[in-house]
Every structure is written in C-alpha cells, then in structure tokens.
Amino acid sequence: MMPSELPEGRYLSLAFRVAADSGGQTRALLMRNRILATEGGVRPDVLTLGPAPDYERRRELLREQGQLVEGVGLRNIYEHFREHGWGDETPTGRTLEDLGAHRLREEPGPGGMPWRVVHRLPGVERPIIDYLREDGSTYLRMPAFSLNYKAWWRGPILMVGEDGAILGEYETPGNWFRRWIRDLVAEGEKAFIFMDSRFVVPHVAPMRGRRFHLIYLMHNLHVGPPRRWDSEVSPVYKRALSRIDGLDAMVTLTERQRDDIAERRGRTTNMFVVPNPVTMPTPPATAAPRDPHKVTIVARLEPQKRLGEAIRAFRTVVDALPDARLDIFGDGSKGPELEAEIERCGLTGSVVLRGFDPEAREALWTSSAFLMTSAFEGYPLSTLESMSRGCPVVSYDIKYGPREQITDGVDGFLVPADDTAMLAQRVIELLRSPELVQRMSAAARDRAARNGPAEFLAAWAGVVQATVEHKPLRTKLAGVELEFDRLRLVSANPLARLVQRGPDFALGGVTGRRALELAGRMKVDGRSRKAGLDAVLLELAWIDAESGAVTALPLEAKLGEDEFFRLRASARLPAATARLRLRLTWRNSAWETDVVQLEDGEVTRPAEE
Image 1 (cartoon, rainbow, N blue to C red):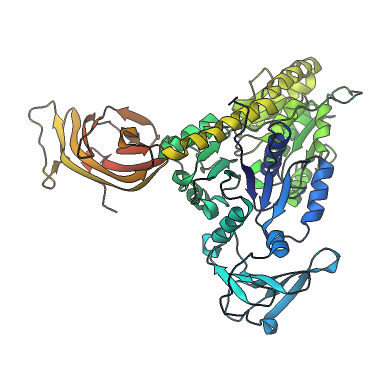
Image 2: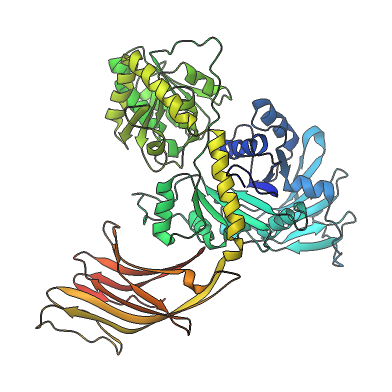
C-alpha cells in the first residue's frame, strides 16, 4: 500500500455542532474531510451529536463557503432517528407518559414544522425534552444534557414508536451515540471514527468491536499555567486523556505536545502527530500591493486569544506610525470589553472590530502583518492561512504551534509570551520596511506549502493504516501487583545510620552520599490477542517536584517463566525534593506508581491509596 492510500472502510468524524460560523477546530475538521474526499478517494461523513432544527440550511451555507464539498456528508443524530426510526426494536410494554400539564414551550423547526417540546417537571432540575416527527408525535424523550459536565451525562433516553410505545432506553448519551455509529456501519465493514472534541471522547471511547477504530485528534492545549508537562489538567481533559488506552490512535498537532503527554502518562504505541494542513490559495488575478499600514487579526473574541494585549501593543505602534491600523475579524463574548479597551487606549479609528466575515482571510493578501497573541493554541490554522497568503505572522511563542510553523526572522517573528513591547516593535519593523515584508512574504508562502494536502493525506494514511495493523496487538490492563523484597538506603559513609521503617525496607536518616537500592517483583494482569508480555517496557525515573525535570535511571527487569518481572535498581538520591516513578507501558496501555518520595532529606513511602 502506498503511504497516501487509505484503508477501505467508513470514515466518520464526530462533532457536537457544525455551523458556517464555527471556529478553527471545526474548520480543520471540515478541511480534513474535504482532503479525504478529494485527494484520498473516500466518501467521509461528519456526524453531529447536538440538536438543531436547521441542518439543511447549515449544509447550504457550508457548501456556499466551500467548506462542505461533494462526497462529504453532514449528518445529524436527531435527523437520523426522526427520519429512519428505531428499526426492529421490540416494544417494552410501556407507553410514553403524558407530560402536557408540564409543557414549558414548543419550539418549531424551519417553516413552522414540529421539532421539539420542552417540559419542566416539579422538583426536576433538568428540563425533559420530546423530539417530534413531522406529524407531531414523539420519537425521542430525554433530559437536557451537556457534553461538558459529567453530572449531566445520564438519561434515561427513551426510544418511542409511532404509537407512543416505549421501545427501549439508554442510560447515557454515549450509549445512544455508539448505537448510531453501529447503525451506520455495515456488518464486516471497517470504521475509522475521528473525534476532534475532548468533550466527545468520554462518550464514545472505548467502543467494542474489532472493526471500529477510534481516533482522537487533540486540537488545543491540555495543561494550565505554567503549562509544563506536569501542570494541572482540567477535568474535561483528564476524562479525555484517561481514555487513551481505549483509543486506536491519540493524535496531536505537534511533537512537543505528544512528548508532554507521553511524559505525563507513558509513550504508548497509539500516539501519533499530524499537523493541520492548509490549502494553498491562488493569489488574486490582479494582486494589490501590500498596505504598509495594515495589520490583521482573525480570531474568536474570547479570553484565550488575549486580544486586549494586541490592542495595547498597537498603542505603541500608532505612536510610532500614526497611519497604522489594525482590523480584527471575529465574533465572541469579549466584543464589548474590547471595544472599551480600544476607546481607553485612544485607538478609535486605528483599531476596528470587523465582526465575523467569511471572506476575512482575503484581507491577508494586502496586510503587512498578522498578529497572534493567544495564551495557548494547538497548531493554529489562522497563522497557516495567513502564511499561505504571504502575510508574515508576529506571534507569541506559546504552546503549541507557532514555533513549529514560524522560523523567527525568516518568514515571521516569534516574541516571548506577554512581551507586548517586543510585539509592537516587530510590527513597527515590518510596517517600516516593505522590502522586509516582501522577503518574509515569499518565505511564508514557501513554508505554508509544506503543510499541503498531499503531505497531510500521507500522514493520515500512515496513522489510519497503523490502527489496522496494531489492532490485533492491542492490550488491556486489568491490574498490576508490585512487591518489594528489598527497598533500602545505602551510603558510602560507613558511619551512616540506617533507620528501619517496616519489615521490608529501611528509609530515612542517612547522611553523606546516598543511594536507594530496590529489588522486587511485578505481576501484570492483562490480555491481548497477539501481544505478549515481552512487549512490556518498564522505566524508572526521578521527577523533580520544583522543575518537573525527569532523570531516567537504569532498571534491570527480567521476565521469568512464572510471568513475574524481577526488578533490580540502584538509584542515587538527588539533592532536590523529588519522587521516584516506576512506569509500565504495554503497547497502548500504561500504568505507573511512585516508589518513594524525597523531601527535606527524608525518604518515605507514599501513602497507599
């Protein structure tokens, strides 16, 4: 198989919402499906999981914009069961309760057709919603739910026949979502299921069946400040990352993010990297010169983008170049706040919020600079789109993406995060030198071209083929038993004192040069169709509590005939507060524990959970 050839099967991308004004994640999802269809020769479907009555209009708008092309389907789970029903489900003998006395409102669909009725029951926190057929009868009853909040995941979700008979129920939305996927995939057909949202992953993974290949593409940063590999992770990302073992592919947009996740939970064999692509646009037939006063931003007006910093930096730009102007395209919750910041900075007329415009990117053909002031990104599509139009980018050097896209001083500028003074100076440098803009413009186009559809398709073909090849080798850990025969401190100082703490190990109170000796055995309880325990990798490392620095240590691990691993190591104690981490990876599965903790010169065993 050539690297750019895709395995046969159904290609399904799950999303909660897809609309013409969606942000970069949805645009990247749609671009992937366009490339799969036009370059890869498959007919992918985008499956939407959220309720909306206007999907036909959404399809029209997306086609008009060129985001939805021939060969790419856009389906909705509510539309599907409204139109196709519940198959041969057997009635349960129960009938749908009449909630007419608790009706809150009726919401019509396009043209006034019945769509859904919302009920509010006394003492019930969440509304109960009936979804309606064209004749006004109920085909689905469920409580309102949110993908974002775990407490709102549970049902019941009632399947309702045309005569009002209850045909069955699902306890969670995830059970219903998986049922829909199974309905769409023919028996014996492979299915490659792409999930671009961290909110969707916990509802779908894991999924039983050898023909289903689950792929999660992480679009954004998963850690909070100070954004190290070991920084705090939000609950929704924790839920997504906890499902990695059950995924056939966990894909990041950059190697740095993959490595950070691997340091957090193990470098499993289902981790891959595929950067966002960009389709190189054809320059306008009558190309206008770049405006030496024009700077552009295309971004959602949301906190992540930190557009207030761009506005404040532009105050310095206008002080140096009074004719400079900044156009900001996009909608979002921070619009009024940003308008106030423009007025406060005295930049009315110099900085303009242009609102959402599907043609905003065309302004990049004549801009001299594009600004990126985000707190974090995954692999920003907006910067690639700017570079593809020859517009140099001035960006904060953040996790992740800009550093992987921009070569500082060649095709754009990277600025230390939060350094608005340098951000402004780099913009001034560009606006004062059309020759520099011209040189960087050509280099930016060349750089963006390396992220074209052919390269993107080849990368995804490699990932998808790997999910097929790795499927028989997948593992599932049930548990790990770890026992230490020896866990003690030794010292080069013959007068050193060893303090006995427990019958099996001696810890603490040692002066001078110290090392920790350990010996023990480990039993791995798990299963795999074809991967044996010889594929298990065991690693030992000190983790510095202050810096997060990881120091790998030699570890001798031998698998005996009784399928126990015998472990031996001697670990020199570091000067800093640290923990000694023992990690196991077995193909797609990972497990770890802290052996000891070191603090204030004392070595202790972690408390048992």
